[in-house]
Length: 497
Picture 1: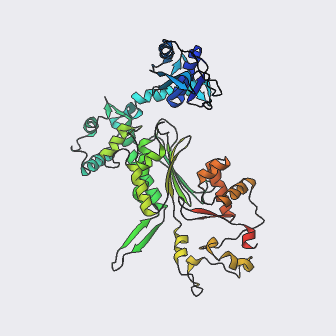
Picture 2: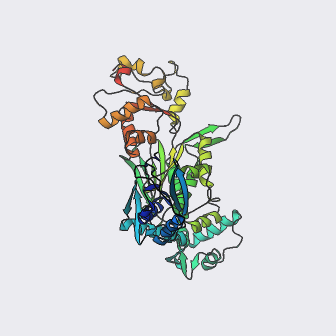
């Protein structure tokens, strides 16, 4: 006769005499999750006791909750029988957080109700304000004199070409008025971001030597209008990615194929600039590593929006933090209808055979593009006959210069080391943390970095550092793509060292 433990969205009370405490618990669950269930007639450990109910019990419980919780909620209160014991079940839902119970604001931590901190309360009040007063629709400090007129003219021309603007350019004030982007002489924030040069850098880009942030090869910051920021970032990514050229049989022209489809990176850049939280001080950030490209956009997704649903397009409804700004970019033809961009990126990456992932961390949203290892993939498909010593893609070890030449034949045979020679220096031992990852991957070669992080209870960034160092020390090798590949654990015993 036990209902199981309490959770962050489930609370038990022994009797309806605890109605005031029950209201506090429901308030806490509403603030944390927007939903909660409370059952009277059950001990804290889940043991069902039941209680005698009078004809007015349901009405009293409902009235107490409505009187104590603000903004108003309308609980669903009903008699329920658990293990043939009569109880009272209360369920609440709400989206107007923060809620208070008798003037006190609570949140949920595990199965406990705790008072919200000042910072938590201020954050929730600000979020509630932004629901009815979005940032991009508020007046900025910029005036029509601050507008980059060349950028605005280009915007109108692009919109006409896309069939989404029907009027001709006739001056800054007239165009912005038609677009409802003015509050008197002041630009709304959406217009200020789109058509005025930023006073501070808004995008930070970097190239790293390996798979971690240890060694910079380049680091820049961009400022300008939103459209200028997008162009600069697009060009930067394009200039730091490789391309391959494939000639079409019987024709003189060649096809240029980038590592990552430019349409996909362009979509993500505009997505990051459009939907970021402009009230956060952080920049949109693009990091180019040896094996991936990351694009970070400050600001969290709405609490009830699932990351995976964004990629698959299975969103029950459309919601944008900056609807007015999104409409500006739609008018120019730079974005399509809301909710269609990420599924399009996934499709482009699938067609190109590269991995694409989206995840949310404590600061915002990160898009990951896999960079293919074309040299290795091409080398694996080449004829590796001994009579082709001039084939640089073979990467065969030179036994005359290899201090482990007695074992060179072992190191280059079989699938284990196909495509490139790896030598383990047995004097460079894995650290204890690296060894934990190695031990785990021996039994779970197809584990993702997220799975490693969850199983070993270490952060994802630490997992990335460990796997990068293990590969640098030649104790670990990645085979296949970032999304569908697997790990090969190498050790001195297997290589005869």
